[in-house]
Image 1 (cartoon, rainbow, N blue to C red):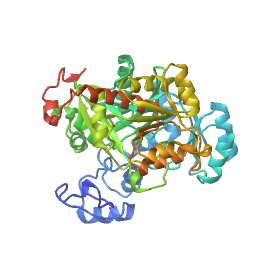
Image 2 (cartoon, rainbow, N blue to C red):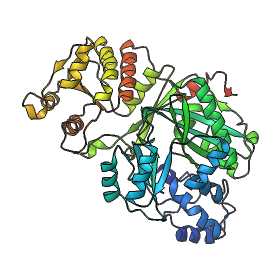
Image 3 (cartoon, rainbow, N blue to C red):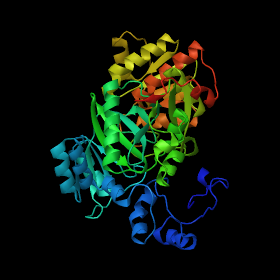
Image 4 (tube, one colour):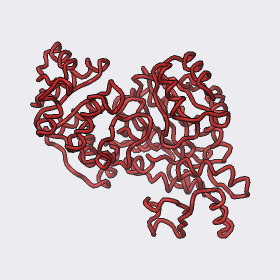
Length: 483
C-alpha cells in the first residue's frame, strides 16, 4: 500500500503487509516498484491521483492490473468519451470546451444558460461553478481558473430540477454486476460527495432504474472494465443522462457494501488479480428490503464564518449511514449519526427563494401538523398565508429588532430551512446560516433535503423505530438478487 495521507483508514497497520508513506508521484512509486518487483499494481482504489499516474507507470514497464490505462483515458478524455456514448446510444447533457472567455461564452450561448463550468482534471469538484448568465461566466473565467490548450474549461448544460444518481458496479470482462443504485436526495448541482442519498432509490420509476442498469452494463463492457466502476447519471423528467464515468472505486464503495452486504472492494480487487465474478459467487445485483441513507458530515462548526451553502465543490469530510425498512426512519437515523439532532418541538424559521415558495408550503403544512410553530421572512410568509398556513412574521436584519438573529441567539428557533437566493457573505441569508452554526441549530438549504427531514420527523413522532445489527438486516434479504 502506497499512501501519502497518514490520516486514512487504509494506513492502519493491519490493512496491508507493507505500507509506504510516500508522495504519490511517478518517481516515488517507481522507486518502490524497483525494490518490490510486483506482479501487478492496482490503481483503482485511490481516487483520481493514481489514475493520473497510470499511463506514466505503464510506459515505465509497471504491470497495471485491472482496467487498462487506455480505457481509463477513454473515460477521462471528453472527445473520445462523447464518441463512445454516441456509439452506445446514450445521452449526455449538451456541452463543449473552451480555452478563452470568448469560446466559453459561445458554447454557453449555444447550449443555453445555466451551465456548469469547471477546469479539466480536477479533484473534488474544485473550482466548479454553476453560472446563470454572461456576467457570471466572465467573472468565473477571470478569477477562478487559467485556461490553456492542455487544460481547457469544460462547459456543460446544467439540468435544472434533475435527480442525480450514482451507480457502483464491478465487471470482469464477461459479467457486469451492479453493486447499488444510489438516488441523491439533493437536486443536481450539489457535489455527489455532499449529497445525502438512498439505496435503493425511493422515487425513481422502475423503467428508469432498468435503463440505468442497461446503460451501466453497456458502459462497463465498452470500457472493458476489469474491477470497479462508478457512473454518475442525471434523470430529468424520466430522461436519463450520463454525467461521467470513473473506471475506479468511488468514495461510495464502503457505503454500498454495507447497504447490500457485498464486499465490493474485496470482490473488485480479486477480479483485478484474475478471479472471475462467477468464481466468487457474485453474478447478480443484490436486492435488499431495507433502505440505507448516506448522510455527509461537514466541518462547518470548526470554521466559524464559513457559509454552508452546498454546490459543485465538495465540502464534506466524512459520512454516516442510517438503515431501516422505512425511508423517513432511515433518514432520521442518518441525521442523528451526523450530529444533526432533529428537534421534537419549537419554532422553525422558513425563508426560501421565489422558485421554491410553492413547494415550501407543502413542507410548512406538514411541520404545522406535527405541532411546530412557523417563523417566516416577509415573502415566504405571504406565500404560506395564501396557502392557509399561519406563520409569524420576522423583520429583516436591516429593519431592526427583533430579527431572526435575535430569535436564534435566544434559542427560540430550533430548525432553519433556507434556500439561497443571494450571493456573498454580506447577505442576510449568509449571516443567518453563520449564526445557526454558532448556535448549533440544524439548517437545511435544499427543499428536497427539507422534505426528507420532515419525513424523518414524522417517523420520530411515531416512535416505532429500533436499532438492529447490520447482520440482522442482511439476514432477512428477500428476492436476493437481480435479475
